[in-house]
Image 1 (cartoon, rainbow, N blue to C red):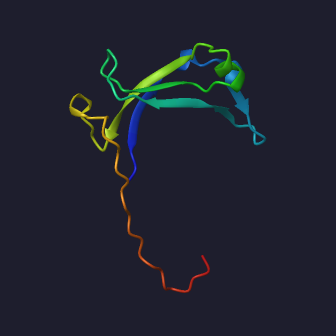
Image 2 (cartoon, helix red, strand yellow):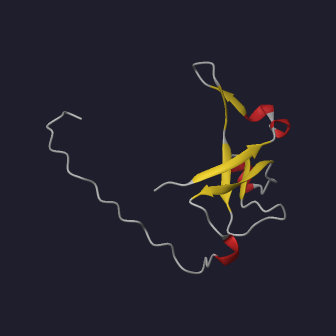
Length: 103
């Protein structure tokens, strides 16, 4: 089962020097998404920032904040969430496919 996160990025905060251009000419921005276990002062628990290079991380450079959001599915209640207990993995049963297709 997956998780859906709704978030917003402030386009005015994007550092154009962090935008890369792929061989196909499309522009990409690498971001980091952090899901916190506590709400911030705006009631959000997901933060988005520019991805940092190894050199930026090693020098403890300040992160460039881009936006925020919340997990919207499955719904979580952080006020009652006990993060001291480990999360148990979910077991998913996969049906055996006997149709002899090559993929």
